Image (tube, rainbow, N blue to C red; front, side):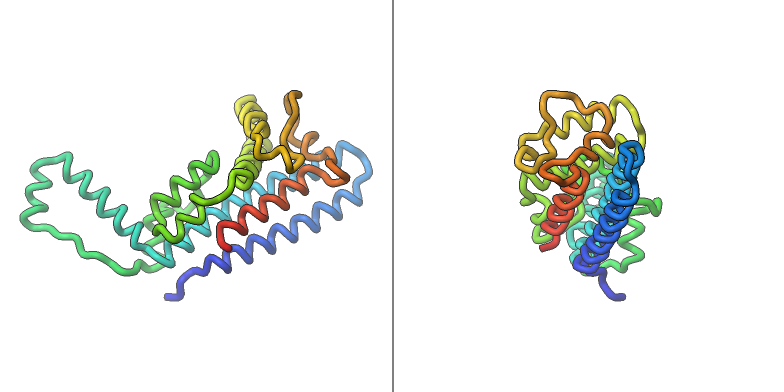
Length: 231
């Protein structure tokens, strides 16, 4: 069965980002009042956040499909840990059992392991994404996640926090959003907040910095960070 191509995952995501930007810009021009532009901004930010979640899930799956050695090793380690907790089972396995190493898993087998419930994983921040890459990916592939720059990590955290706040509208998600947008790595981008607390994500992202809406800056930097995980 043909392996999944990380380049193809990236290309699909890049195309989606382009289409959403075009739609947002057309909407912005068609709407001339602040309230509707705020709604358009929120819809755009929420959409790219959801799309990014799908991208990360697909990318990790694609890398694991390229080299499943870490997945196989993780499964073996998990079984050994379970056996170690039960002396009788450990003794029986030592006497009668053995592990048969697999050089490749089919896409269906890999999907059953990485996504048994058939739904994407929602990551609370970039650290959780990195943990998942370390768990499932071979060193050559997880290195792309481990070596991502601080600004790229901050942009991804900002995207996730905006997505969660717009989806849930809770005090906790707003507190998290304000915490994330304090990151020093965001300072050169125009996204970092000042001392004033962000009250509404839509208003903040609608505001323009050097003639450009913050949400457009966020989307462009998210594209660059996502690209860095492949190239």
